[in-house]
Length: 263
Ligand code: PTJ
Image (cartoon, rainbow, N blue to C red; front, side, top):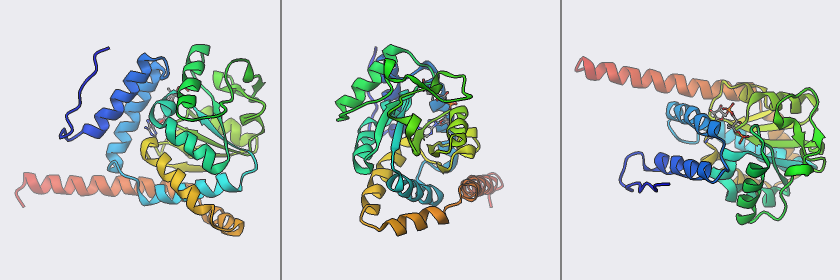
């Protein structure tokens, strides 16, 4: 594979570096081919949001940290894209929140599961659930390969973090009475709409912020964490993300008209 050098002064250097990371990990068998398409969809929404962590995303990150810290059996579910883009932060988050890490794939194959497990271990993970025969339990009423889960992990979890997900499993996990935290740049996706807490942000920015917030919130009381959770309303928060996109587009459109008509 030809390695592309990204000039640091390139105006889109950060975005191009992320793409290269995904392509590299696609070649290594970590990322699914559909993962590259999924990333393109994410990029488009990131553009609309202004490629920054917005206020609603920060609120959702705080609620997510509170949910992880009040959970009894929190689990971080990892797919190909998350492993490629946020393996180190996944491990840091698991340590800070005392959560388990489980591989759960839509396009499941033992080769990809093993490649993802290795990547996570290289990033410092002591234990990675859900690989091969370990994923021996099933999520009811789910037909995709995502139904296969580890009986020590997602099956018995009370809170599951699902960065970059497809909607079906989120719905199924919520039906099972679990709290689902999603990280999804698309506030309109089924995952975003069905999750208990949705962080509308790029996994690359959201994960380190989540680690930091968990560490800070650990100093607070259980009552304080519960208060944060009670005050959080996911649908209102998603609406605020849509407002940000609408306002940004209106502003850009107005600026464009002013340029055209020389005002
Ligand atoms: O690794 P596997 O086999 O489990 O497959 C993973 C993919 C991502 C291919 C699979 O889960 C899938 O098909 O997902 P979808 O249905 O395309 O949904 C992915 C969602 O993630 C979309 O709503 C994207 O907007 C969003 N997304 C993409 N890249 C990012 C993102 N959200 C946050 N950060 C990103 N970097």
